[in-house]
Image 1 (cartoon, rainbow, N blue to C red):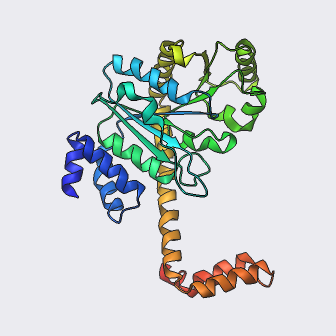
Image 2 (cartoon, rainbow, N blue to C red; image 1 turned 90 degrees about the vertical axis):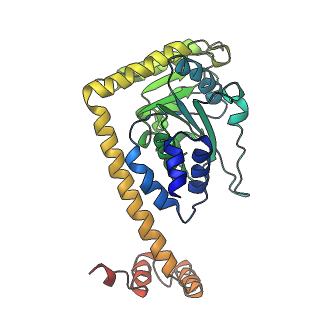
Image 3 (cartoon, rainbow, N blue to C red; image 1 turned 120 degrees about the horizontal axis):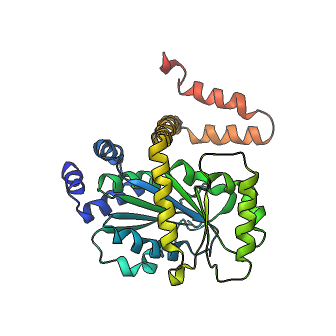
Length: 317
């Protein structure tokens, strides 16, 4: 394990791929590995790209990569694909779409499944970001599953969040009302060669005007990603947002809040795992569930009984 971490810190791509696989598979050494690499994280800038399915996120990332690499920056990409609720599998196709960068040693692309996470990001995705951070990537792009309202998870992970819309997406104002408006640092109207682009841009700007005045106003950038149009403007706007966060001191605050959430989530994760690991008598558990379903018991007192049965409260003293 120590050798694997050392190889990662030296920039070994196979070590990075192996570590992400261990994280995804919940390997028993995962926690120890994450503990070892954590002191080497905190240097990468994380950009989240989210939007509805078919909006062109992958093609946008592909074009944006060219702008980023032109400045000599090393890039990690995590493309999050939806996991089937039936088979548990995912179509990890984004690496196929980014073949132009497959041989670039400064670009590392990894597809991951959501594994049932409604917010668009699984726990292992956030841990994979830490692996790529320790791997030495300057910029990490996270392309998330386009599932609409539930996809606000990305704002808790990214330093800059890009929301992708299209003129053909129907009532764009209704989409924005679904919580997307609040998470965007930049708006991109992709497929801007389609009818309705000007209207969509105007609607978003109108809603931005209606919001309370803030020190940062998200830019609204039309793009045609398959032709590379508007990508340079997007990259410029992204750098401007990063500069704003750094000079205003908000980047440090954003990352402090992220660490706070990570600590809270880790405590909840450990407690939950410990509780269910100690509830060994599954028959008692199933009987309790059936009683709750029949309204013979309630879930609130039953939860306390369950914790009492494993001496959970006593162990705190």
